[in-house]
Length: 270
Length: 270
Image (tube, rainbow over all chains, first blue to last red; front, side):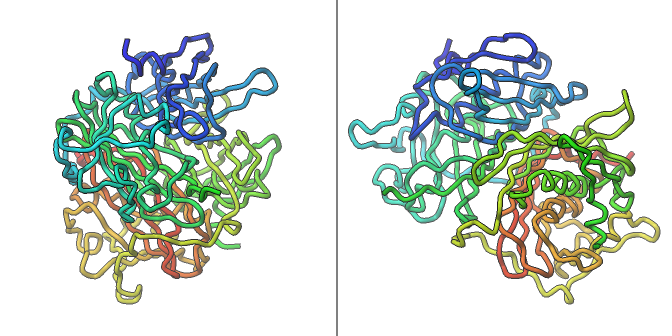
């Protein structure tokens, strides 16, 4: 079993409830990465809907930080019929009176394999040299977050925000992505990929953790095997918040996922 | 009381439940407009959160068509503390055993007036001649939807998809918007505005109703009085679905709302 699948696994406990153990290997900043947590929830929802295997749209509201250890995912099906099923889900942590929801989700699942095969995408995949000509992210010795061992990222050699620490000021960056153990992408992994890279505020000279308030991802097709191309961009940083749009393109040149999140601006380090 | 406020009003019935009467004046195609319904729900949530007057992020999953007449809005607060409160809400219609949820929502509310006043928006407002030099939408005699009497739209005289019926093929359009009775915009109205205009597929030569599956709107600032500028665009029409991004700019030149929806492509008329 691939590492990612082990880490997002959960066990059905009846009545739409699933038990998971959140893995410390997805830590970054003060807690567990939100994309990883969305993969855990998305995988539990999938178990609840055997005839609707694929997430089509998932909206997550982040209520509190996820931490390594036991978690419970509760699911309630709001509509089961038709080509899409809609589910409300929550991820809880803490014992007894201390338990609190950390993420609240609404999601619609369906079967991506059953969709018509028309593609009239006008968006263009951004140019990237092949992965072997791109650069990995560098960290000061001992400062790698555990998250950074789960996957490989390769950035454009001319856009070196992450390799030199010099932001471009444009509020965007793009790179190649694949899991460290070579597990190929699938629709559930896309729920994680849209929130695994550093916040786009890094490219605006604002390093630091940018807590997600809300994130919605639309999965538009099953990704082909191989590297994914991921692009993050923001256009509206104001009022202490910013939106981050993410596109994920697969190795066959198809736009397979689009997401937008609303996040808080990183606070300057004290 | 302005027409819009009358039409989105609801009465508290205790335990987070609100009673509304959906108004036939927002009909289009086969049912009530989704943006209007979101205004009704958003207004009920606001009543539930007296110290958090403004929607910041609202995600809606459309489960079935809304129709004129009685509706019940149920709200459950998922988190009340901090600068944002998060609420799950549903709009129900139908009697007794026939009742079913029509829209399921997650939303975070706060106080837009309390946000820091930094604005580093890099997006540019699209150029539009002043409203009096723009063109209204024309309908064949007797074919105006009741919705069209609720507000004014004015389109760029050089981009006449809606005035001549000739789509540009670009998958985008923009226009001025204001309520017919001159009521000025506020954050709740923005929840409606992002889904009141015709689907962007109109500009791709695909007229007809495009049912929304999911819509998330981020309200980024209180809009200034006056006309709003609204832009719709799509970049990924594939697999029988398309995303529609919407931006709303206020009369002071501020990007006050951003939304994205996932919708089904209109089916060709038979």
